[in-house]
Image 1: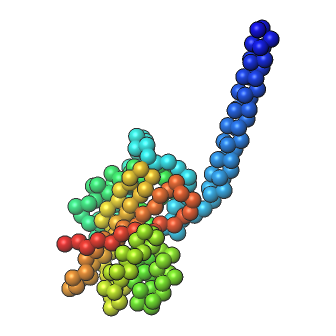
Image 2 (image 1 turned 180 degrees about the vertical axis):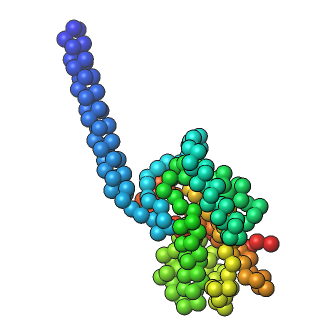
Image 3 (image 1 turned 120 degrees about the vertical axis):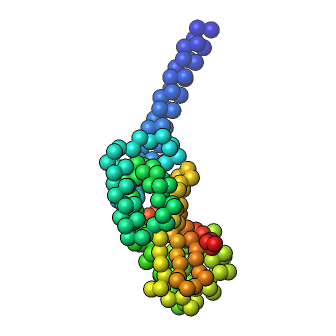
Length: 211
């Protein structure tokens, strides 16, 4: 009886050692993956990080709030943001920058404008490769159904404004409103990104008409 007890204790000790080694191995693999993607740089301006932002209780430093206010003041002064959305965007931008400090709303905005122009010109040139590379795969079919409206649009006649920014779990959504003076076209283009998924790219994931 005593011999069986000793054997059981020894086996239990061996099992605990194996479990600890397994956990250590898994941890090192996870760290290797983080290091692998740490140097990625986004097409939209921010460095790529594997970072979970589902926790919204992240304290933001005063410098982050000041930086966000300065950014949005610039947008307001240059008529680059929808006025009634400004306060909400500032609040959401502070949350986002507290978790992804390298995010730059100015770089994002400028790049988003170029991407919108690229997509519209790609429609006009039947450049499907470019279109597909910039769209969320789940949005491709829907975009194909509405793309004919962009055939005769001159991209330099479009007015652009930042209109919304929000996050849901690890997904970030930023809307750019496009409008043409004297034209019925008035839409919001949504760019989205899951910041925990490897890859630096944002994608166009939705377009909705604005009344």
